[in-house]
Image 1 (tube, one colour):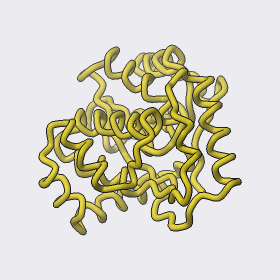
Image 2 (cartoon, one colour):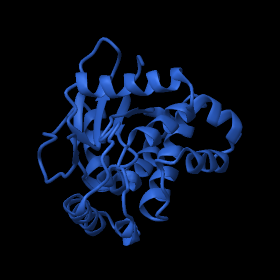
Image 3 (tube, helix red, strand yellow):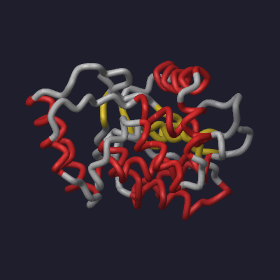
Image 4 (tube, helix red, strand yellow):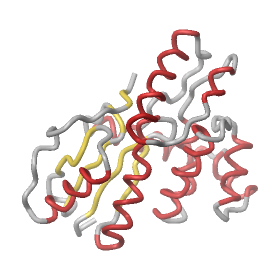
Length: 225
């Protein structure tokens, strides 16, 4: 992009990204098409194969509680009654990559819908059938979605997103950066959750060429591991 824009690096199964969802909505409502938002899938726990153990569930529950307190976003804690759940974030990320082909607004809507399905509705968004049903809610033919989702091209495209985030040094989500053109350096808006008021002020300051420190103020994020 050659005009001012934002890049949002997130994972649909990152709880702090779910907490950040109203902030993303506030950004798009405030700045609209004047400041396009590009979504990159960062890859929190892609290709995980081992089921969650008791300590994993306790750790994730603690994160959810902190996000709920900080953001007010809804969570269905019945999730932790599941046995043998494999916390693989790649399928949900790949679903968003497929839907992103319909446009960035569709990608952002898909991110929000998949997040809500997982966190608030206790749906298994690692299941391709669930993801197909959610794609239908967004106006995409489920059969067409599933064909794209199952393709090698979709897997490669998703992997490229993960590599892009890692090569940029992104180690946690949500991360929001701002740029003015492909040949210009990017500025960090936030690495971690911050409130909508805080983020809107940081973005406006960046647009006004007066960029305060992105580390000023507490921020929390889901960390790659």
